Amino acid sequence: MDDPLALFDAWFAEAKASEPNDPNAMALATADAHGRPSVRMVLLKGHGADGFVFYTNREGRKAGDLAANPNAALLFHWKSLRRQVRIEGKVQWTTEPESDAYFATRSRDSQLGAWASDQSRPLDKRETFEARFRAMEERFKDGDVPRPPQWGGYRVIPDRIEFWQDRAHRLHERRLFVWADGWHEGLLYP
Image 1 (cartoon, one colour):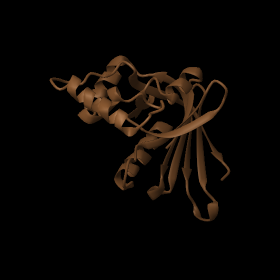
Image 2: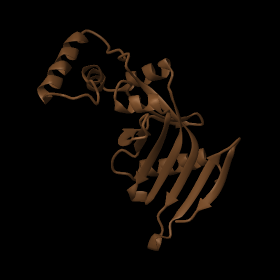
Image 3: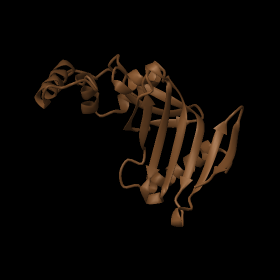
Image 4: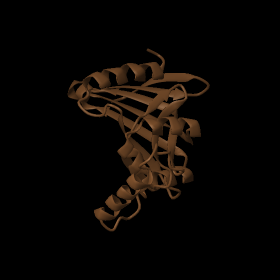
């Protein structure tokens, strides 16, 4: 397969069939304005020719990193398949309608949590957050929970995608696709 997006689709389908938990879990690496790196796990919520999408609070640390340096790297590790996929590229916000549509699919408690949380900021004690959550339950008790204005999606637009397959004796297979007016494929040493 010489199309990295089609290859990703095939590997992701296999991961969904074999991974016991969250085959859509991916490590997201960012760097702040000073180049200080940070990595955390997020969930892939959409992908296609336009990129790889995740959602979060746009006032948290990862959002600050992405505002200062709109480049990111993603890593999928599917242990059951002995595979990983590395993706690097520019990052942009999803559209407001995309963010609204995805937010509407979340559980009510997840929606309320998005309102109650000041993601990545210091919390004096768990009870403070729980009280804020109960306040949001009360605030929205009579209707739908709208998307908070600070919450939305990001799209990583890939310019490098590497497919890594484990092989015996650490003789791994590595296929690299680089975007330059089309996808160009090469191999990397293990």
